[in-house]
Length: 360
Image (cartoon, rainbow, N blue to C red; front, top):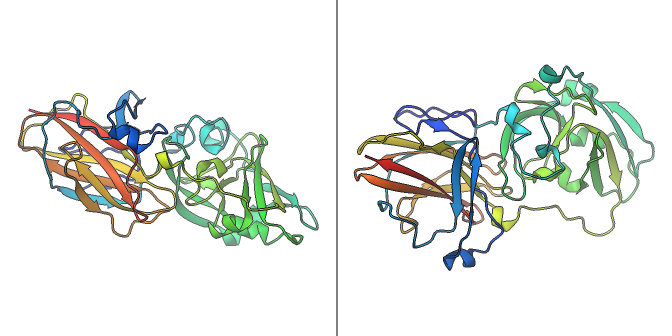
């Protein structure tokens, strides 16, 4: 079977596959694996775009489904998926701050805004200055595919972004001794302080174009801070000020809550779909873990008694894994697919994603 590369998160696989797509997400509650193993009511069910997906610890009493052990199939993956701009800044979590929770009001085509590239740079530097980042963009622009993920189980996104390295602005500042922190402030005053060395090592970008669209907000600048393998609370939009400062002691960087690491999502749903015994069915989804690459996607059709492990050789940590698994079923009845992922540092998805479907 030939796979279509899902270049957009909202592109489902057609053919004899599950026929529809949805921005479904397996979210976790901050629970320990031990509590789930005791058969308590753990996990969550979320409805997104009218579609429902469940995430839970595996349990022995999973319902009356046809068990299929060690099911084999055709597996493929890429890291090319992007989230459409009309969803990118709206589908993230419930946080009241940070870039990912605010409406996407900065696109010029929708708001008639004017691109603004001016930044004020201050703090513990010998002379504050204002720069038009367009002057740097002529020679220093970079384009990259980058994932953005919240720390606590919200949907994540990925985009092709173009911008100027943050390092290009930092290099222009005549910093005082001991400067070790940086904060980018948006027009609304939002800003999160980062270790300067961390931001430089992660090759943070001052982004002015997302998925080919120039940003042009009504307030602030057209610049957003994006960083690979960093939680979205540090991603700042409409940046107007950069402060380079001295910070006493160690400055920690927020990490993903362990209960929400290694997210795995199923993008299909089976409502109104009819599958006959022997039909090929293609499942697809996304896996992502900030800071560690995905090394395998694993599938179980017998509630975790057996797992089919599919390696994702060459996958990198800065992008998500867009996976597809095609198989068929000989036995009629209700079936349940459970999906999890593994990372290079041996973390298994704390919560698995599931999909129910019927073969007739």
